[in-house]
Image (tube, rainbow, N blue to C red):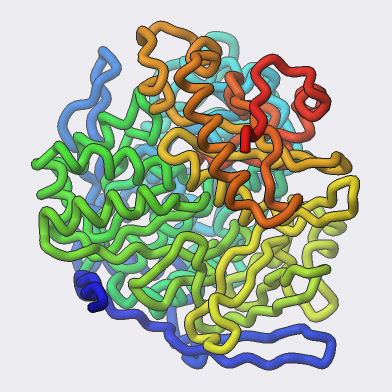
Length: 620
């Protein structure tokens, strides 16, 4: 007797079928059967619409910052107030003659002040660039921030907090560039208060500037995280952003059924938080509650607090955040009840979601509401707006990607024994700012953007099930024996085997005889050791119980291997966290394989020549 199929909370899928054409050379062209429907060409039109239709509705909210560093009650920004403030700020920007040649640079975490300045820029056609706060507050050399400033040559730099960003401003921002502050003062240079911009009286110049905006007008620059190279400035236009939002709606009709409510920490300097989530909120007249939490031990409590109070209709996070929420839901009845009360879809991105996390979420959902909540995922990148591919059904397995968005063509190009996915469509960036050679290299002879991601069909005989992830082309390598190692699938296998104690795995072995893996662990690894909270991570990872556990993981991996290409022959636990300065980790916590391998090459060499004390090898 077969097990009964799980029940899912109802959610309609918009893109469920595709067409495929294949050339004699094995190149495949894939697109959705559904065409892209008419949509606005300017994001400003959506702000104007909702300010007129629902002026009192909350657009954005954030908890008040208290003097002791804690957070208080929610402060709300309505659509009507957002438009009125954006007009005044826009007028002030026009008076400064800012443009794409002199854009606005934003140094800020997600905040209402950040949002207001960005909206002011958007309204009058002045491009802006939100920069990763880590480049100013964690970085010690400010090299990435300096590179971005040199690339953009901004006419105005905004920072929310003088104390937090003073050192970075002093080290990198030229004295002839205007600095605007939301809070505090700078000791060694002049500055303007954000209040002064708010106090500007708007005129008909704002309306004229809005009328001049078209689909090709640049709305923002988003810089890639950078791995072995410096970050690249991805051009984002109004037309690109609007097309991507319409594509999202057609793939996920749930977004348009009622104004969405989000509780979201994802950073606005990244395309997931700043384009995908802010965009869908504005496009559909929704409300986004800024979450000052984050999926790290010190801040996860704030996220859980917010989710106990605000019930989202869709919820976005990275796997480490979903893992923490899954663990908390099993014992936190208030969290479980409120979070699941009207949720229509979970959505993850940024890394593979290990199956044990998936199972834990489903168990908590079935316990509370008697059904599962759909888990959405897909594939995209900064250069695709980011939405490109989305799963077409609720029965999703880890690694599934799905089908292309409406109006976009995929080109699957054989690269050795892999298929690289390439993109063409109205959501694709026109290129990198002030980098014509990089732009030319990013597109192939037919104008398809080369993603560097490898995919394969879930079922070659049923293409409507969609694609699944097959790693990054640039990450794959050969052993000294000539055997090809596919990093993506092996990495996912190791993370799944090591759950919930493995954050990510960096695969080693280029030109070596064997495959190795270096592991970044999650905070839960401390539970294995049972040491006092003040014990260092190095002490935790050297504890016999921790080493014994990972020896078992390694043995399990070795026993299930089918050859040298997927047999992990050595394992190393890394006590030194990934470095933001070196590009080893992004704002979302994703590990950059190439950067880790580059900056830890000496460790890799020792590791593969048995010169490391805590090297683990299979005992089977």
